Length: 402
Image (cartoon, rainbow, N blue to C red; front, side, top):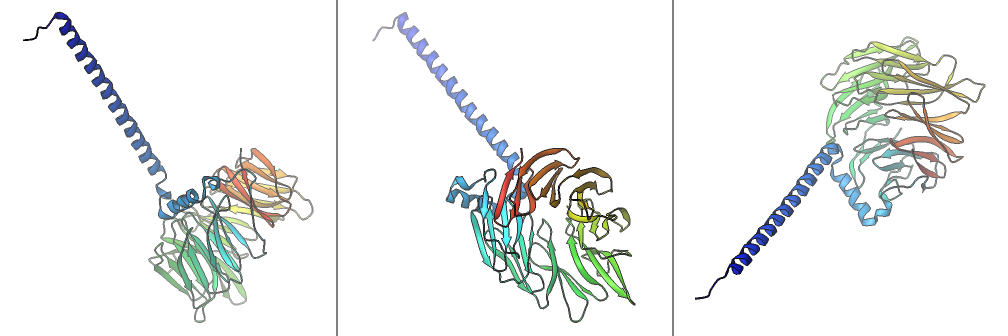
């Protein structure tokens, strides 16, 4: 039999200790891996929850298309330009992280680096464009053709029996179309986000000029008028999609509202030649902001909390910029020594476009930045809180906000 010494026992003990240390190290490594995976999973779940409204097949396909084309197209650089051949009938809108542009010939959808995802033939005489978080809607104003598309496909295509007066869509994808009619003054047709007709109004006495759908997908505000004797009576009407008769009507003495917007707080904002009026959920007037003897140069009326109008008199080249909330409270009033030709609001930021520069303010009137802009600039749009695009005759210029 072999003989064991105390030294052999010490070696065995050391080996056991080393094996125990290795096992502890492996255990710690396994725990660290598990902890990293757990943290990554929690982070992924939080990220998915934060961006749940943006998780759809269209956004994934946009990402895949960018990866396929190359990461260099993933984000536009400051002052980058998307070139195009301008036509007076062109309309440009912000769509997701890029733009949608409709001409008399086609609808083109691209990202902010100019990567084109889709081009659809239209053949419109008078193209109109509505962009939302979900879809792009374009139609031939005065024609009969309407198209709804996402980044890669036309998802709804319809030709109406009568000419289209106007149409609008909310961020959920619900949309309303107003058409002419031989038998009625106008027809109002509402579709849900699955493109099913859910409401139809044959307007017997009122002509409809503007319409907007509430964010709860249950109501529509309408700018209309009817004729009584030799008088034209303007109204704002509010409809529920479960009832044929309007829930309330607000009548005005002067002018017809050229635009009407359903606000997030259930109020309705209407733009007139004489000013802006905000009505509460019962149709009662909450406030009005009158232009007086000044002329409206630009405006931005959003679904959110703030509204902006830019006014000037007929002689000076200056502009008075007023921001007010849905209760009519004046948030700020800024006098500029330049002529403002376009304005846009995003959250608590305001973009103003003059002939020479783009000016970024907070809604409280604090100047954030100023940039030179193309001499042929026409209008400005927020892409997101930190970037704006300037639409000009020669292209679209992206500007990052510091």
